[in-house]
Length: 98
Image (tube, rainbow, N blue to C red; front, side, top):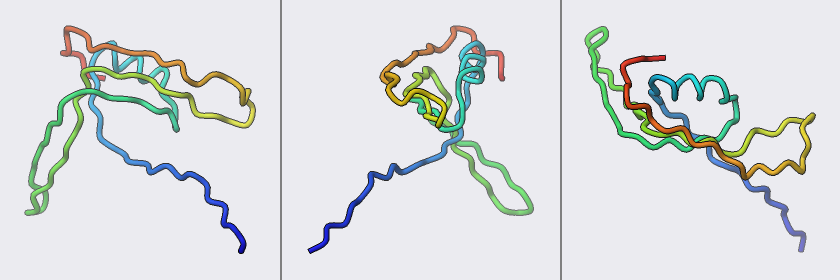
């Protein structure tokens, strides 16, 4: 019998994230396509009507963000330790929107 080789495939989900102030600046500076992030926050749902149809949007309002492993590219060292992470805490003043 021939064994089929299976590769691990990760599921990808996209969410609307809202980040304020200095934390937003830090995330915008370091986040790249393929970056892994852990977001802690609260869910917020907004609704509106467009062309007679009720629309909804659920967002995660971030209270803290933690950076995970960096995406790998062909030019990077494959033996780099990707277990490093950087935590960004929510600022006290969240009036600034970025």
